[in-house]
Length: 84
View 1 (cartoon, rainbow, N blue to C red):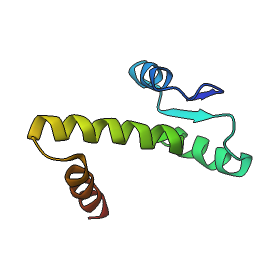
View 2 (cartoon, one colour; view 1 turned 180 degrees about the horizontal axis):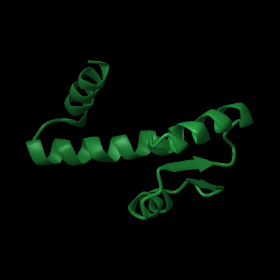
View 3 (tube, rainbow, N blue to C red; view 1 turned 120 degrees about the vertical axis):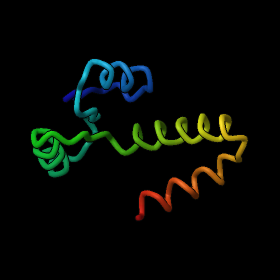
């Protein structure tokens, strides 16, 4: 688990590549932080909401480019898949 003041994509990616199962920023409210640390201790991956949004957006762009689709189309497909 990484708890940091840095919320930059290279920091997130470096932490995840180093097998961290969580990346949270210090601005996470204490009541949320406790629950997220417990979730990570159970073996789940947790990310700060801002980092997760940026990583998903970058992932959507890569998928769109590879499949010759618009990012909006990919975002819709991913959202529907996650809802199921």
